[in-house]
Image (cartoon, rainbow, N blue to C red):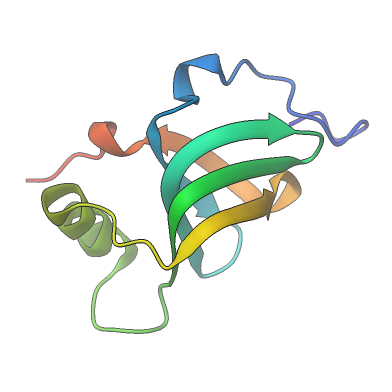
Length: 97
């Protein structure tokens, strides 16, 4: 993200319409279909907003479980502030051993 303008500088076209994982600077993890990147927000649909402090799984264990069982949405649509996103990846690229 371009910190001066608050807009995503990178090309996110390959992620649009795909199931993605947003790693956040906080304990939250966002999983869902990337609908759009508008201004300083990423918009996910059929999203799972997961707080990694809840439950007994590490972030990586939870991602492996979701990759196997699928995303369990708890939000129809969510706008995520881009300045809090550390990384974005395709759910299909999560490595499970």
